[in-house]
Image 1 (tube, one colour):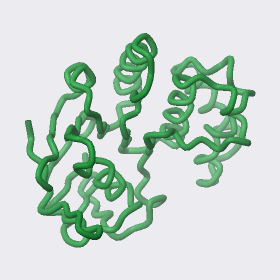
Image 2 (cartoon, helix red, strand yellow; image 1 turned 180 degrees about the vertical axis):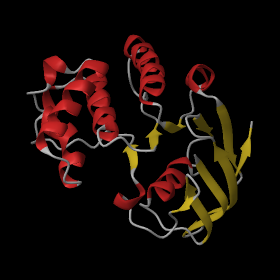
Image 3 (tube, helix red, strand yellow; image 1 turned 60 degrees about the vertical axis):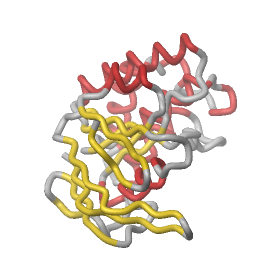
Length: 212
């Protein structure tokens, strides 16, 4: 479960104020809004990458507003996937588990499990520059899921993909959500994604969030 309670964020002249919403445990939240309205800013604040001025952020009733990004145990897929260009795909997926000192055998088992789920078995020994857009997004998703986070934050994960790849990954996100049981917050401007994936829907406009 994720709860935002009266959260306000300021960055220069830009401001989000009194943001309130709740996604129940295992829910799939969709956050929509026009370009530049602050969707990514809000997602980064939840992940701990941007400070908040006021209010509280809670994960499963534990306040995380002032703690480090790593301590929040949130899986995050940014818009550009942000893969390490000189690191092999299997090592990308393993990275977050290694940082958390998970033993090697468990790390390798989890890599194999996610490679099977996300169709990455054939690219595990490759590097990001040789991957397609859809493959890069699947690797980023695997990396975010690897340490079994309680919350998965996705920032327009299906953007800039061709129609066929977009549809395949949309269906894949459904399967991942069902099999992993993770709570999701998915930022998008795509109505198809909202209708097909969301169990709870929000709209960010005029500096605050409304449930839709």
